[in-house]
Image (cartoon, rainbow, N blue to C red; front, side, top):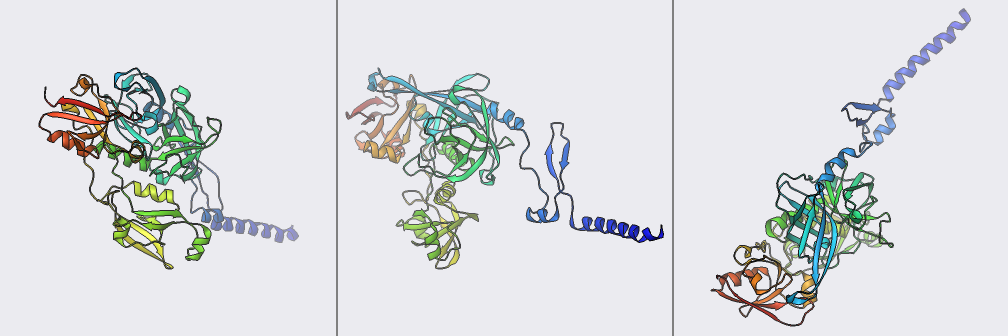
Length: 476
């Protein structure tokens, strides 16, 4: 027994040392999730080296099911059917065509967001709720440059979604796409965030493309539907897919909620988007250019042109500057810079971080509109609806180029109104009021308001070369 005593003592000492070593260098970490009964469960032990690399305790990024998010989102996603009459001129006889898509209820009083391309040029928009109720929708406003449109139905106490923060989403995070693909109502699919800030060149013109890319299944009919996180918050508006077959092939794209939210606020308040511009030409950096100017990497946006009297010119920015951040948020690509600037209105002040001659600098810039003004356009377009029964909007830049004229487009005509009796149709572009040229909706509204009583509205319909004139009196 005596000869085994040293071995026993050594064994006990080793055990005590092992416990002391473990207590000092290893501490438990936890993976947390919530069961349906609300009980919090924990699992796992992670060594100190892993904890140091992962910055402390590891928490699961999402629940292991999506039922709560789906139950929140599906009642607030609607089906949209938009009809468009083509051809036939003012005397009718045209062909009815249509498109279908999805929309998301944003407020209990009936504001709904969808894609511009779902309702573009539509004369009749029907919204079907998840509980099968059908409503006629009014187009509040539409923005081709972000492919966002805002509708309104007359109802109260509707289910709706809250906006989430699209800046905080992370690549690899679980998301749900909710919509009506192929007219299959209230369809939910799951995927992950595949990329952020994607530009796929589908909108054209002076568009803002900084899409969230996901692999959640999105098909025709999903356009305008919701992309939500696992908390059921709206983080994007499903807009497009890349496909060779016409159906889902693993790549779907959504407008980030932070950009969509700004566009929706503008459409609701003004009837049009208050677009701010930095007043520069931009391009993505490549590795060679970054090395030549001393940047440690190619993450940033190179300024290759400065607009005369634009916001950047007023602030003292120069060709060759590289924008690396805006309001303390990193900017890695042109699409990200366009998205961030697109969240502001003319007159807003932003802080721009940039690289020049081998060093970082910061400057304050007051953003302007395309006319180098810091003022906001105050015309909503419905100012004449009550008296005359029609609504107007400005032509987009693409429409001005396509039609080769300036003016104001009639977006709706109320049945039984003064204007309705003239046979004027939505889509008519007013180019002059009582012989005086008008360049936009604001000028047309002012000219109509300032006319004594009799009015002559001259203009054109797209696809027709004949000049149309509509004569009526403001009071009958």
